[in-house]
Image (cartoon, rainbow, N blue to C red; front, top):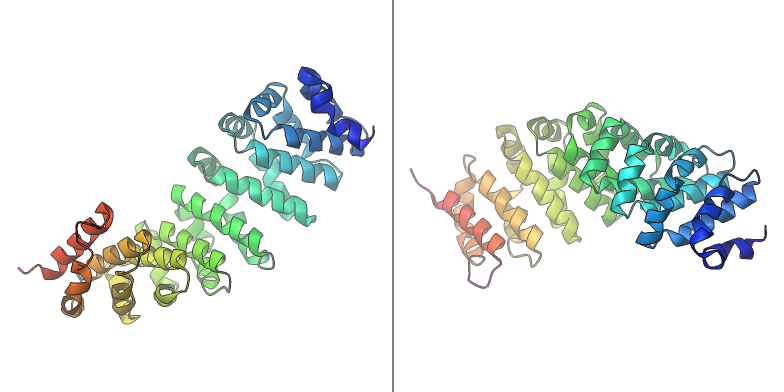
Length: 333
């Protein structure tokens, strides 16, 4: 069947378009399967047509096509899944029918465009808690960590991997720690791409929420690198680095490492930032560090900077964070 004829199928066949495309997806000719998938890809942008495609069993068929012998079929199948993953019902069906297993098998797909579609799809899924939990159960975290080290050449793919990992460790940290994620993330903090630095620091922020994560950040020598990122040219990197320091400084070892690395000065500088996340995370990190011996004396010299963020014109979250910091720093027994 000619390419143009199939691409017009949704219009030409009206309500019969999707049943026809589902049949064509099972055709013995690879070219016909590819063109049916291309037409389906155009259709599923529309939520109603996406829902209709699910009713016709397209997701189950796509699951089968992920293992197709033809790379073009696999590539188009992953593209359709990426678009479907933007719809709530489609995500539920994808998880219910076990799409993660065959999809994850394509993480080692030799065709770059197909592999990129896989990363796009997994990343879109990872931003929804139920899907992130399913990815953790499927054992995808160790594979994502491994792929971060292997996909350094393609910046966009590396960003997607780190972003997916960042969402997964919000769900469960211990598995990520067990496969050496902290060292891998630490090495990405010095990357020339601000997007990669942002995602790596964001993943470490999430990892450092739990005690074991804080301990690993200290043990793997991450703190000095995080402190260096407080003066990064990118505000998102600064915000995530300050957040990771804030979390790590909760434990005594974390406080000691942060102070030894010279975190106080850069954090005070960030208090004046016009970016809310940067300012708030810096204030909260200073509040935690102020509990350490010697830190309070240093911070007492910077009270004007903190008081400048308590005015009526400040956002409530900024004002409250500044007030908390001032309360801890000025408290006397």
